[in-house]
Image (cartoon, rainbow, N blue to C red; front, side, top):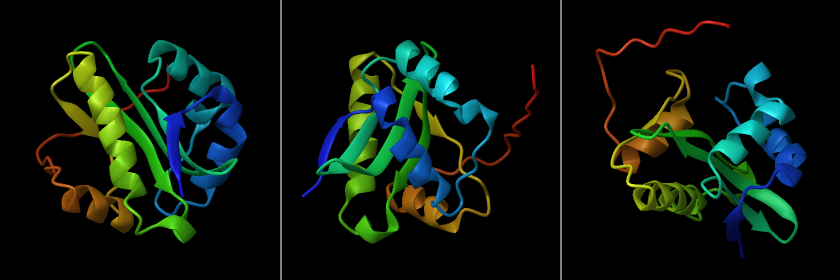
Length: 138
C-alpha cells in the first residue's frame, strides 16, 4: 500500500532513478540536485512522493509563481501503475495550490509522450493549442 508524503531533497536519487526510467520524460541540467533543492525551498510543501515502504514509486513537482501553478515530473513506477497513484499525486499538488490561492495550473507534456498525454486528457485536463513555448539558456 502506497503512502503520499512531501518530497524531500533526500529523495532526489530515487526520484532521478524513477524519472530516468519513465518513458516520455525529458531530463536536463535543470534537474540537478541543486536545482531541485532550490525548487523545493521556493515552493515548500507543494511537491510529493508516493512511497511503498522506503521506495519512491511516484513523484510530482508542484509550485507556483504567485499567479499560476505549474506541475512537473509526474511519474509512477511502471510496475505500480493502474492504482490511481498519479491521480492522488495530482490531487495533492492541486490541493496545495488552492490553499495558496492559485486557481489555474499548467503542465507541459512532450508531444510524443503518449502515456503522459493520455493520463492528463483522461484526468479532465484541457489541451491548449495556439500557444508556443520558447526557451532560452540564461
